[in-house]
Image 1 (cartoon, rainbow, N blue to C red):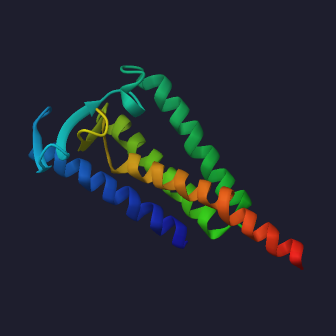
Image 2: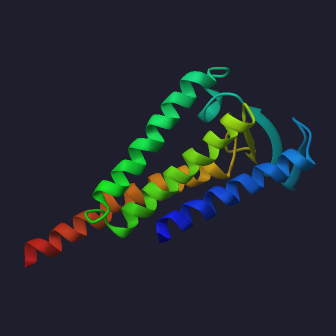
Length: 156
């Protein structure tokens, strides 16, 4: 139950950020937060990460739905085998996928607004941040924590 609440909170934060961007900004408008470094820039993304597959919402939507169902099923099925960090990773990825899917279904595009200038030329959103945090959690668990757990088991 706590995991469902966390997913709802993460999706809610994402959707609120997109709603506020859509409500208060015009497409293409940018607001400097830290000049020449961090801006809030309103972009309507009709593709996926890094603007790939623009205009292919049907293919993207089907793939996203399959991913959401697969992750949810895996989390449910393996909940007793996954570490806490792994569960968090999958919850963050699931929340990000759901957040962007809601945009595709109800808006016809994904609202992007986080614009780090000088680092890369892509604008992204909170759901994308959740997905990246999830991947980091899973990598952390697999590359560092899993090795420590195995060493401790070998000692016993």
